[in-house]
Image (tube, rainbow, N blue to C red; front, side, top):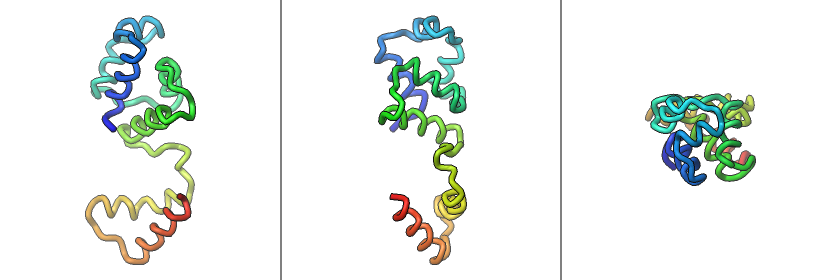
Length: 120
């Protein structure tokens, strides 16, 4: 999948625009966009991401749209807003514990699996 910055740059390059051309066209700071593409600057929040997606010709609802936002939110350590339902948030500690290598209880694991099956 790669990083947010790599994806951003790939989309910009696909438009056949240099960094400076892209920034001039959209009145952006080339230093900040360069840092963003190199992973030196954390991805912005949703409103700014939508603006950047528009500049990069990423169509809302497309696979590229979801990848762009998923990479940004994951890299910034956030959870996508559309996934912030109470039931999911309630199950996150099980996921975190498992990712850290600490075993969840059998009951917690069964509940989490049931939740995922229902969600899919």
